[in-house]
Structures are given as structure tokens and as C-alpha cells.
Length: 265
Image (cartoon, rainbow, N blue to C red; front, side):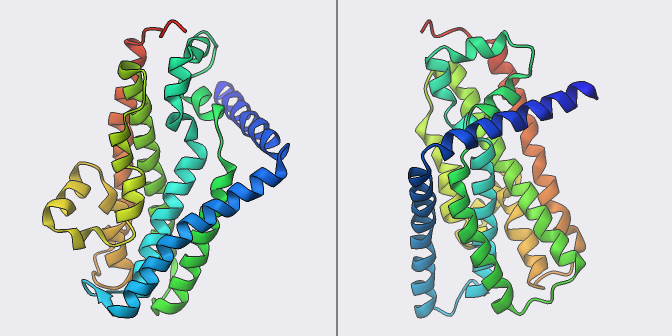
């Protein structure tokens, strides 16, 4: 228990160091936050103009799609904020910095997580929260305890899945010494196509995002419950079921650590 407390305390210390470093350049920080907000805002505009032409997509209204997109954008932003160390892990491997991590008396994952913390992603999070509030007001959904709990589960499940994808990306670097860009299909790509319920892309995509990379477990199925399209209360717990994806990601990471060979830098 004491070891866990000290690890958490150390991780918080890592975060505070990163924040203090960013605050040394306040103008740069606020410009980056604004940039993150504006980049995501262009996606919002594309959705806005599309729904000016079409009233719904596969039966989902504009406000319901906003709920869907804002949730997945918040999930991705949270994962990128806290798991940014995995996203830039290839630099650590190529530079030999991971060698120093291995000889320290702390877990490798916690140290990599603490190596990078992107507070600038708060710009995207702010936009996600704004879209979510608007979606709540415009959707006409009756909000009760189960609805609020579903949203909380969607945020937890989505953040875990995206963090697991970043962990997989980092694990591959043990063997390639460089990040593979195709992984962006499952991270940044998911953020883009996740703005709409995954079922609109066809049955094969829905099956893939249910049983392989479980986007739909924290996006599509709980949305059915929120919007009243299904009364099955089990759908609200599916986002927690998506957390299973962290298990193969951790197994791949441990496999990579066992077979790690220094880059020689």
C-alpha cells in the first residue's frame, strides 16, 4: 500500500514538473490551447453544415450526434493528456532514455506516463464539454441517475481504450525503434470517424469495433440507451466492458520490455 501511495505521489510530482515547465512559456501555452480548440472546431463546423442539409444520419439527430462526438473527443483528449508519454515513446527508445528507466526502482509504465503531460489538450476538452452541454440541452433526453452514470462509464471506457492504443503504439517501438504511423488510424482516425455512431459505417465495421477494438462499447451501444432507442440497462455498463482492451496492451508491453535491446545511442 505504501509503495502504491509513493508511486502515485511521484506521478503527481511528474505532472507538476511538466506543468511548471509549460508555464515558463505562458504565451506559447495559451496559443497551443487555442490552436487545439480551433482545430477541433473545424470538425464541429463540418457537422453543423452537413446537418443543415440533412436532418438526421441513420435516424440520429444533430444533437444526438453531438453527444456522441463530444464524448469520444473528451475520451481521446484525456487519454492524450495523460498517456502522451507513450505517444512519444519512440524518441525515448531511439535516444536510449529507456535504459535509464529500467534501472530505476519504479515501474516502467508509471515513469513513461510521467515523462510527458499535455495540458494543452484542455483546449479540445473545453470544446468537447461545450458541445456536450449543448447536446444535452437540445436532445430532449430525460437525464436521471442512470443517464449520468452512463456518461461517466463512457468517459472511463473511452479513456482506457485510447490509452491502451497508445500503449500498443509504444510497445511496437521496442521492435521497430520508431513509431508506426498506421497506428494513427486507430487513434486520431477513431477520433474523426467516431463523431458519428459506428453503426452507420456498416455491419462489418460495427463488428470490428465491438469485438476487436471496442470503440462501439463506449460509443454506439450506450448511446442507444441514452437516446431511448433501447431499454436494455446492460448497455450502460458496456463501456466498462471495453476496459478489457488494456489487458492485451499490457501483455504486449511486458513482452516488449522482456525483449528490449538498447538502441546503442
